[in-house]
Image 1 (cartoon, rainbow, N blue to C red):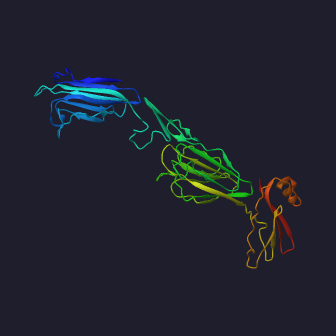
Image 2 (cartoon, rainbow, N blue to C red):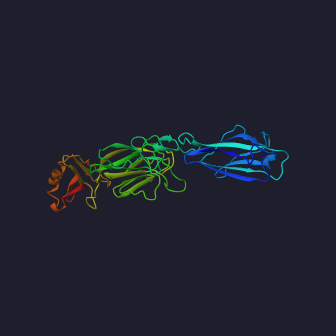
Image 3 (cartoon, one colour):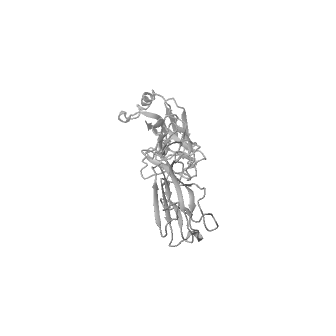
Length: 385
């Protein structure tokens, strides 16, 4: 993969009115190295008469040469080494209809040179996301442990789906946080705690997900909610609770606190094939559901309600005051994580609830409402598993 270029009759004077083109090509993964060992052409202002031009295959000019020495208006290659950026190069030699003297022309040598793609890229994009390995005529990429090579053979992506969080508190974050998250990646986190609890999400102050000024999260995103699909999405964060989508987030403003009112929450994160954003983090906690039911449509002064959380809960009584308000708000019933709870709860409500309606319950509030008419009503409010 080498050769020599010479002007016609070299080293004798070259003919007039010539137009010669050499199209040089070497295999992919190589470039062309060109140098001149002899150069003697007719001099002229800006090389208007005889000249040699060297161009990339895309016509980008690498050199325009004439004369025998460089001046303000003429240039000779001298000892310069010309290198193509790809595997092809075009050399053109032209002479006009007259010569003031006898000029011997030129001799040039070309050879194929391996391109070190791993260290010689001039653009801002890295050849490989993680590791680049050069070999004669090419290169290949590899990724750190836990990542996989994308089908473009350059991008290192991660698929962190399938994780289910059942603890009552925990933390989630984008891959590599607080560093840039990987491109072309998809993560699906599921928080599933015992029914009777509700999940609260608290995003950290550092939130950096690629966005667009004129569209809602068209690139990267975080999404919160259930049964999520990333069709037509690029980079986004989404949160879904139960069957309701709680948010689609991107940009630099943290979503802050999100009350889901559900024991089951899905968090999805998706990134496209570009960008260098730093990602996100969140902590989640849980608390018991507060039923707060309407026991009857109207209450009168001195009516009172007795709250009992079954099984084993304290008794709390609130009273209708003379100003029309209750003496306190309804207490919160905290569900308990126990495998024997179902049978205990059923025995607690059997006396006043039809057996056909009994199911498994995470927590039960039993309300004894005593009206000033002397009537007592008993109501059970349950949270299904």
